[in-house]
Image (tube, rainbow over all chains, first blue to last red; front, side, top):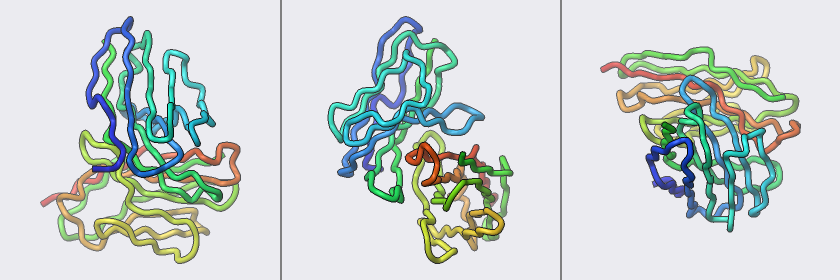
Length: 115
Length: 116
């Protein structure tokens, strides 16, 4: 149990589908993240929310749409994805504070397959 | 810009032997350095971090890492490896002087296999 829960753990979707990934953190943190992990590639930071405000968007295609309704929940809405978007999507959270010494804690990930 | 390199894709070590997983970094200012471990089909688990102070940092599961500023390295070590240590290990760096200071830049990972 990491304190960061992701659902679903596995998702298969067609290229025309709309689906969402959900993340919930039980650590009392105020920042949440989406990362993408593809085979043979380094982890890619997609989005960062701090105090429910999006503070980073690392050139992610618009077919990925994040939503952070409160500091404990984070969604990634998926629409018209491509097969190359198949990957492990990792949610994470941290206590955002000055000096940025905070540790980021990850969930177990959602395996996404686009067919 | 910040970057981190893990020069070895794969490290094999016999159970009971010491292990080292290498990491070097590049930052503009002072680095904050982290190690994470990923077991199969799981997320990343935090092992340890260096912020300031003692260059030898101790973390979870008996792991430790040594910060070497002159060599810009932060190698992960364990005195006696266990088969259960077999996993994918990631080094990460945060540069507080970079434009994207929240971003934790990860290495490409090193697969550690401990042989019984």
